[in-house]
Amino acid sequence: MVTTAGDGPLPVLEKCHISAPPNTVGERTLPLTLFDLVWLIFHPIHQLFFYDFPYPKSHFIDTIIPKLKHSLSVTLQHFFPFAGNLIVFPSANHSGKPEIRHVEGDSVALTFAESDLDFNYLKQNHPRDCNKFHALVPLLETPFKVSGLVKIPVFSIQVTFFPNSGITIGLTNHHSLCDARTRYDFLMAWTSIAKHGTDELFLASGSLPFYDRVIEYPSYLDNLILDLPPVQAINESYRAQQLDPQTDKVRFTLVLTRSQINKIKKWLLVQLPTLEYVSSFVVACGYVWSCLAKSRVQVEGAKGEYEVDRFSCVADWRTRLNPPVPQTYFGNCTGLCMATTKTTLITGSKGFQTAVELVGTGIREGVNSKQGLAEDAKSWLEKILIQAPTIGVAGTPKLNVYDIDFGWGKPEKYETISLDYADAISVNASKESSDDLEIGLCLPAEQMDAFITISTNELESILSHHF
Image 1: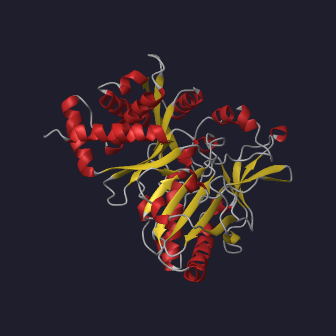
Image 2 (image 1 turned 90 degrees about the vertical axis):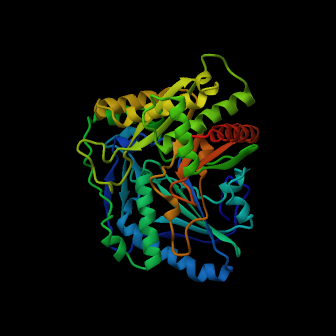
Image 3 (image 1 turned 180 degrees about the horizontal axis):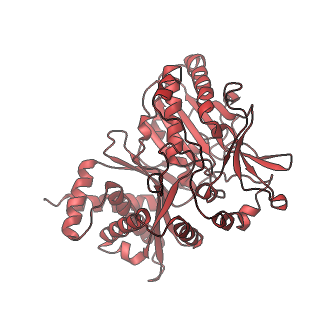
């Protein structure tokens, strides 16, 4: 049985550990940089892909399982950190900062399970019980101690078969391993190798990971993170956060089409003639942030004029560093963008317009900062440690999750299950068109009802204008 925090364990068809082919990787070490260290005490990332697969179990066992195992092994030859472990030096013997280390035989835990849940229900956009999804994403394996070092597994995979209807592929990674860009590169490599049975096309694409640690910054910034009590406390008893059963919480996907977004932009220019250019991402985030705040106030009531709301997202810094690093740089390489405001300003009659302005300004200031990496990093840490209601963003429409095709078709649906940990939304390109946006949310059922009503009414009101 797969042990989960969801509706119960699933029957396991096979549990195995997949390593890179023998003698292709050996012992390799990847030091963590400031961009990785900030995620040490963050919750894991859970991704879930849904694929139609109207075939019997025998076909899944005889065809899909061998293909995924072989192609994963070949992929790990090129993306060795996914099979490695996070090495933490106990504070009593603090001889170095954490790193990802791979030794011969290291592997990824791969589970094949079976579910009798309603596949077609799970892949819809309408509100669905959050708990139904937890059993479909794997846990990270348990840390262990070797020669005085704590080794923490950083990646695991679960493939779940739904008889005669579909397959889900659930991925869990420790956030210190990598960001969305690196994870996407890994998946594109894996799917290419799975479809073609060889890594020749992947190698010809020039997409090999860049492992050199070339980002320069003052070393004291590492210590600002390593000296935090939660980081100091990491030892062999450390356990990555797990998904808890959710009481009356539902998952919903909102789709904004390119046509709708363009009309919203025209409406915004009428409302705010001096508004600088805003991207579709900014429009979507401002819209959802405002509607979320309004739905929370409607359900919970206002907490006073000094109540604060905060929005945060990250931007890929690979091309923004000086000097820039290659697009295939392996690891985390993102900078924080943030906006803070009084709740009353984004829940009033001009709440949406205000939210768009704030999000746009926060992103421009984050990506165009001239302070330098050291000052930016200190500013990020200060902001992260301030306690305030924050809507975070997972995902990016720049990396099309619906291109993750293992050879039996593109995904029918994508979900970011780790939204369940905190107040966060996901923003990705849509299945129907990469110009459309899918926004994923996870909220208490009463607030979700309020959000859907508020967001629908607001959108209909905007679209009723003629330009």
